[in-house]
Image (cartoon, rainbow, N blue to C red):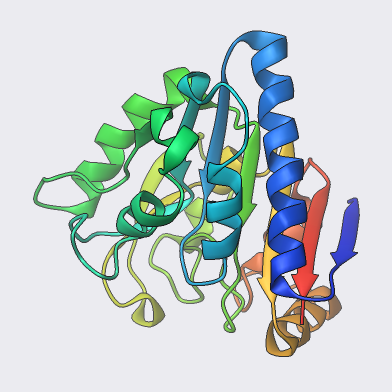
Length: 232
């Protein structure tokens, strides 16, 4: 398992460097095969990175953007990752990208997962770029400790696509790409900031129980190198 640690003086420098690396990867994919795809994460950490990336001079009309995971809430909810991406990434040049939301206006997260899997699998997998975050409980994507479908989500034999996840620590029902959808991205990034997150990362690296800290699956079993971008 290859891991590359990249440390930056502050979040602004990290955001700028990550935006350049992601834009270069997307541009190379477009040049190579005519299209590019990226799955991004929510939370407050990636906002500056999103704004930097939105200004990149690439052919955004050939880029598909989706989410690593999402709460089962409508786009206008303040807890929606779709809303976060719309307000911080789908701006300027990047507004021309194709965006595939995970939330669907159906009764259950399970129904939404099936719909989105059919939309994404044929056009965007494997991803050229995946940008993951990490919670203080060691979750990444919506791979939550205690999640009702965690074992299946982390199983490499589970097909690529989107599935539902219910967990006490997750709040709402969740939609998440499976581990097999994310672990082979052309550029696989773990974006974390702050001393607390570094402490969590160090704890994860020191153990091997994926049910306790699901981020360990990415750190130990991803076939693509894991590029860790960290700033204090």
